[in-house]
Image (cartoon, rainbow, N blue to C red):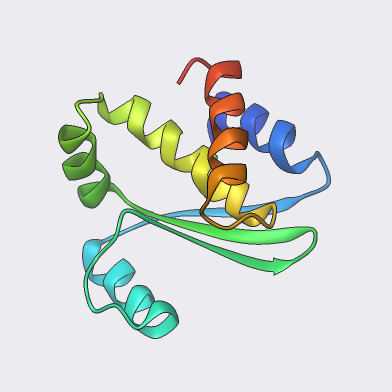
Amino acid sequence: MTPKFELIQKTILGSDYELSLVFCTARKIQSLNKIYRNINKPTDILSFPLSKTSGEIFICKSETRKMAKEFDRSYDNFLTFLFIHGLVHLKGHDHGPKMEKLEAKFRKQFSV
């Protein structure tokens, strides 16, 4: 993990949180998406809390590149955006106004 990602992780989840970050193929993330969300297509990111102090994030680089173009962002910027999104999910938040507000705070803090 890059030093920037380590700092973001520690800021959002704390220094004792054990995170596994996996970059995977579209085929792998589609399989995970089918198994855990019953959606049979690839996605850009999936987050899996394992306990209160550990979790996993899977990111598909090819899907991330596609989505970055859709949102008119650079790949690196969108990747960081997704990473923050995944971490906020691991913190226990679901999609909605509260999660969006928290993400906006972290995006601002890290210039994303």
